[in-house]
Length: 343
Image 1 (cartoon, one colour):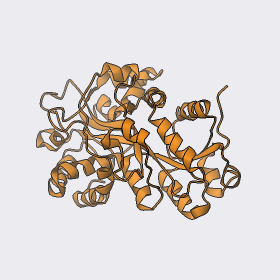
Image 2 (cartoon, one colour):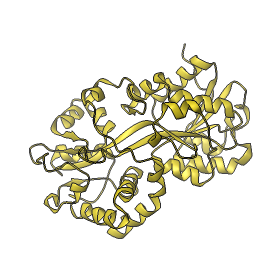
Image 3 (tube, rainbow, N blue to C red):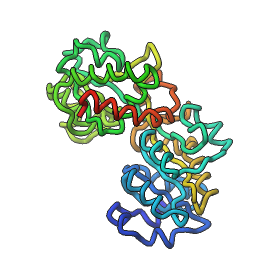
Image 4 (tube, rainbow, N blue to C red):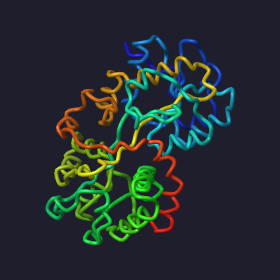
């Protein structure tokens, strides 16, 4: 029988307090504050409990709200692990003093250098590629091969992309800063603004739908939103996916921009050893397969079996930039967005 977390609480309960904060500290537990809102993550928790006998207690909420809660709780916080998506958010938690440095030979051996914070304060356990989607009837894919090409004047009025408030776009721009410097990254951001088909609106799925509907010819979105459309039981979703093509940019150079789903051990973790064991489990082959199957994310460990759709795409080059740089460049990315008028 699957193990059900003792306290899987919604945000409304989180903000008003709960039994989690007073009753969930035990030698046989690990308390996870998670900003990952995927039902499929339950399989990760169940598998960890089956393997170790350690119960996983989950408290869910927004990343910034979880950070503030941990700070407010201070040394009395029951939080052992914080999980979230995007290096930018992990960096924000790091800057607030949330994470402890972890030394683990298992994590060092299993995870690529690019997926480990230099001081062991957080780790990436799943990969999320920021891909380009296009209408093959309108766009010559041989001429659109990189993120840099998105700023080419030939694509004026053709691009759909989310707002500058979106952490995924902030990290994409942060990667441009890392590779090209702030001045060239700003010129790129201005070029993308000049090429937008409309003001930014909606989520990643809406950008892909914009291409399918003819509102734009090119979109930028994380790869798994497209897979969800492909795998949907809704015929309309499948029709959207059929009208667009996916591209992994910069294959002749640094590789496609990769972000992460990641986690770190909380500084005052009452169950520190269990927290480290939980992170080590997330790097195991079993957990890596669950990340790939549950939300169509790419494993970070080489050789792990992926979902059928991801396997069908074959191997492609991913940017090996250390994910900590995406966080470090986040403040500059936000300033650039403001200067170029990226809403």
